[in-house]
Length: 261
Image (cartoon, rainbow, N blue to C red; front, side, top):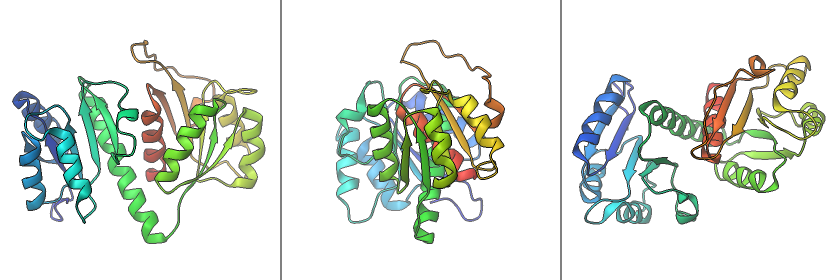
């Protein structure tokens, strides 16, 4: 775990590419993380016995037992493993890992900035879950999403993290539900039926009961689509605006917002 003397989170980075290990270690240490390195699943298991990290970043395609062998062993142990981020060149991994508890996925290659945001989100989620367990409560999310499939996935994912969720299928439905639901965070799809997320956020800010409620607005794009970081109407009224390539980006934004609330 993090060193009490420095309070810097400890990351175990597991990958068989030597240059990538060195690059990631230098980058994360610059951003005030402690970093342990392992070149294989076997070495990573030995490192875990010596010191438990706050986060494991795990490559799947490695010689020996590989990433899957490492996952199977740590998840079969009596002691719960630390959060694990999967690092891989494969796509559409959420179905492949269905039933396997991991903190998220990072596609190779990815930018250093994206990696850093993922790490922050997972550590924030872990800290938030620990605080919720100590308090014996959960956080309540009001989700404005008009796609039933996406709404169902986000609801299930948030429930696994210990949160309760109320869904609304349109902008007006969000405005109707928010004052009575009193959520800890409002999560809005940018292009939402009836009224888009930005204007909904502005109206929520003008309502006394929701003026201080954290708000996340997300806009989904496909893999390979150009990403434009736009300043939309009402964006100044949101705590976090995320251009999401998949649902994991949305979940990360929610956790970061809850952690800072």
